Amino acid sequence: MYGSSTQFRSWTFKDEHELKRLRVQANADFIEKFGADMTPEERRQHFLTAEEEHLMVRSYEHSLRDFCKKFRDPRDARIRMLPSAATTAQHYFKRFYIYNSVMDYHPKEILVTCVYLACKIEEFYVTINDFVHNVRGDKKKAIEIILNNELQLTQELQFNLIIHQPFRPVEGLLIDIKTRFPQLHDPERLRLYIEEFLEKVNLTDAILLYAPGQIALAAVTTAVSRLGENLDHYVTDILFPQEQKQHLPVLIEAVRKIKKMVKNTEPPLSDSMRKEIEAKLERCRNQQNNPNSSQYRANYSEWDDEDLPIASSPFSGDVSMGVERIRSPSAY
Image: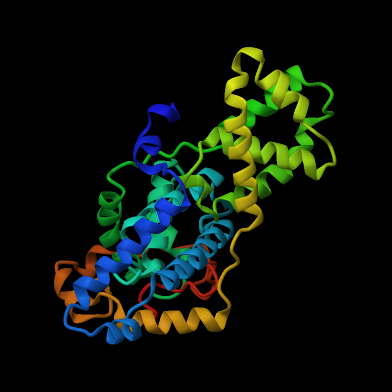
């Protein structure tokens, strides 16, 4: 149950201010560590600000969504990534950058590692060789980076890998509406709008602030509104009978805030702004975590290329099915 889960205890936060404070602290900690011998002005010019980091993470959340939507199993192009795997990957990505700076770990590398780990946890079986056929560029290097980052990612997530998602609560609500609220004709009509809402909510901090059941109710009521109908009577009188009415104001406020966050979803960065921040990031990132640096190669010199075979694929090597602007993590 969500109420007794690590997701609730460790990864559900009080409000957006708490999340912002933690992210600002991660930025400040990195600058303090790597800019100890710099003046305040030199730090300002050299390092990313907390706001620039926020913009980068938000933009890569869009890239993660697109990567998962375009993902194909190279052995059978009809097989697409499960929505549950994509949602879990978004949770991992967001959690990682609450306590870590993008200057320490580049989002490109963490993104693909989050998706690969999420596929394992959500039982969407794909081999590492097949997985990297969805990554642009150097496949062998991509394998190396994903496998090198996987344990680090798992540790940063405190080994809390099970994600409670809104999909089951949505199904429960639809069944309940069909059973106890026949006034709403054919609730199956809602699915397209519900899926759209749940995809957008993953691009917000709502999944770090609210319970899956609250997000599910926000999705269902939004879908009903999109059809020009109303669920007020169902929510206030059927879903919450008289003896549970004291919980209703809290739920209504949570649903209202979730809808507002989805409505105000931040768009990805423009190409020009993204390139500008990326260029600054390349200058200030931690070279020990940069796959192109000598420090990184020294740390992982134990890797033997012969241990990283690339399996043959039905697809041509010229076909890239990854997200635009996401190449192999080595192709910076």
